[in-house]
Image (cartoon, rainbow, N blue to C red; front, side):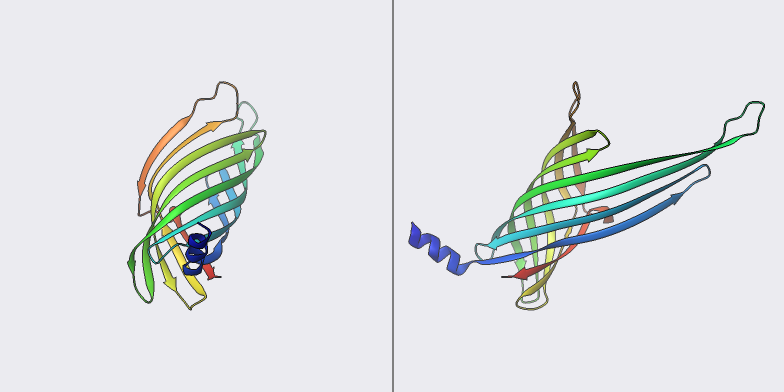
Length: 193
């Protein structure tokens, strides 16, 4: 068994990398203005079992600050305008193991599909939500050199279930087939170790 493990390791290759993202959005309106600023870091470590199969795990941390400022006329006999500001901080932690099958392999790029499981914990104000899901996500890996690759994933077919950590909360379940939304587009780099 030990010989089989050593032979497997000799033919395999580790890779590490991930994604880094910063996003700032302002949404103006007639009586309100909203903004959101997000920072995300999602390192990933994987192991190429052979030319067609790999396993890996990604972890992620995302912090978002959302602010809404509303201005309105309270009416009545006085023409008084009020302004209210609401701020909310949201923290998201993820754990995503996957198994990857390379469907098309060439010298320059590989087309792959990841079968993923995902656990997400969202903390906001004094509340939190736990979510579990699984999915099939397509992607492309472009070999920039022997030691560096560019990788992208786009949407996929996913199922998720989430539940707030409050007494009496009910779970929410959802199914999605999405290969076109840029909201689900990820870019990253892999370093072949």
